[in-house]
Length: 363
Image (tube, rainbow, N blue to C red; front, side, top):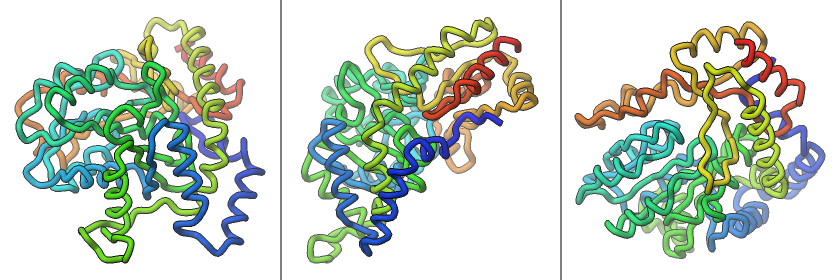
């Protein structure tokens, strides 16, 4: 059976090094706030090109803590997209702020800059852009708007570790970058893990404090925080995998190139890629007009199990419907009936790639 993602393949690829790193942590008797976390934060900052990195329990917490560090709270609005993982918007709602949804581009599925600017109000306290599926948003235009209205930008890089925009790594372009190391991600641990990047020392310190109950260095809570830390085991695994991230992303891009060159079925539309971005293909998302269910059943019958990211946009989920105003999200609602995530991951066997291609061509 071939799934759209197979986290175990990433583990098996570097099994010896990962097992050794895990054993070192187990023998250390230091499982929280040890040298592995410090090492990873420093290495990741160097890789992304920021001054500071702060490990968190997951990406949702990284976004939530980033918003709190920017003093976002009740009465404020945060602009983002509905075509994203629920965690992006959950982080906003949990601050007490109101998420406001901008539509997405019909080709790249990234945030539509024109709609973003149209929805800015005097209550807008932050913008969260999502580098969806591994492709960077149009950051020049977004940062122009950010500077024009003096609104900080948080980059949701959960699906885009190693992706670039005009030669710069995502997570280094906005005020704060937030990453996920969930097992299916390009850079993954074996459990939950997240991180925030920034060039602002005060923001980094605030995120770190808020992620540890709001403590100062005397463990005196200066604000009400949460408990959200990257642990030593996950950091040890990430220290191994970070060395190979560029190679793993290149492997994904080679599979994507093969898909693009070899899948000739005219019923299937390939993902769009900006010329100026370095897409890392966390997901390879095709679109199929009116035939999605038939395609999925056909693939399942032949041992291939694609995904849909995402079948229900956040603004249509029960707890978030109240946040949508009268305006429509035309592109968002159009693509949810067409998107299919076909298999792509580092360590994917060539025979599985070619089987997927053959099935799609014969559909």
